[in-house]
Image 1 (cartoon, rainbow, N blue to C red):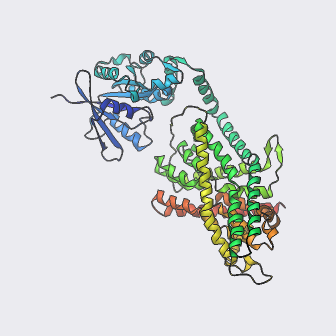
Image 2 (cartoon, rainbow, N blue to C red):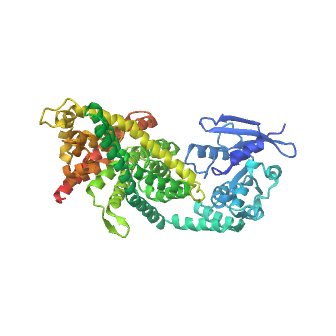
Length: 615
């Protein structure tokens, strides 16, 4: 009785292996887990033209036989025949994306070098041709010394020639094979580039342009300069472009306050609406234009294909602090919100890399910090230019974001050499095609993020502001006494002020930090509500937050407040997600402890230094 031959589908992620597996096996599939691991094992039966049955195994996508994830470890063990009770594949069918030929040939050469019967399935040739890229399979076959069969798995094209090549694979001439067994990774990359160039018949101008763009944007020196230059432009735009829209929203809020005061009698309900809802929540909603502009740039970078390239640019920098480019995407997501950023660390295979990324994610300047930064910068940093098209306010905002990034990298450096000690691991990621961001997708993405911001303003910020207003409003002050001094909130602030006064924080700041634990932007509404309650008359209540800050705060206090928010993990939801992702309270408490410690220290250093300089 002859033994059933085994063929393995292997290749990079996103090459179309699963689609080809489904097309070849149909319903004759079974799914289980590999012995001792939770990685899924998919196998199925296919029949060759001669009628011979073959067991086809769909291996997890991999970039190398030097594994950096559980999936890649399984692929290596199957290919090398290291699973007990699992037969070593008799044949490799290497699935290659025709549109990313050079990248996919790096791993293909490593597999060919093992000396097994091998076939290249040149998949997705239709998409490559759509993009103006035509490849000569015969030239590619001559260069590699193995059969190359063009396929379009999703349309079931090329399946018969592939099955015929699999049937005759046992008689391959190994002497004609590309000799890659002893090539190093850099040598395989160079070889892959040369082979790909030789196999391309025609290439569209757009495809050539994309290659030229990559040479510039992925350049080891120019790439980082372009990335940080782009970030600099973004933060300039956040202030310069948003200002007219902020003025419209502020005018609308002032008009609403005036309408309520003119139509409602004095009392509890009117004060709740004007001091709590319109003044408190409105002071946060006013920064919606800046949030939308920031996310417009981020979404455009993602949809254009640039964001993945930014990850590669940052990989070199992050290697110095013990991390890899795999951590960049979760950290970049944390610029929107640390919660999805922490959840995105699930894609990081190394547990210590993942833990380090979770612990530093709150240092990325999330969108909730933007209202805090914007109101303080708007109040204390002049709206002047320091160069052609360079505003001082945008420059300070860029500096705060950069300060958070540097703080995160230094924290990672310390963590990777102490509690999460380990070696940095490199990474490979598929480069998406460049494209113009679809306007419809961009509009939908902006609407979703604006709605999330407004929903937070209508729920978390609203509730925190109302609770704070009630604490500020009761018990009522005696004639001539400050309402804040007499209130429950004032008594709480007096206790906190003892701790916060040494770093330059006044009592209003000490009080605002408590509700800000619910969400960072609540600090703005808390300050607005506190000053509105303490105002002597309606004109003072309508004055707005920025004039009150300018009148009551010194510049050193304002700078210390900014430094505090660079580090402080003031978001209970982030702490809760960190507990869930680390399966316990140990690491979230470590995170909260070291971040609050840094916030206190750097706020103090900022205040003491600014005071000493006479600012």
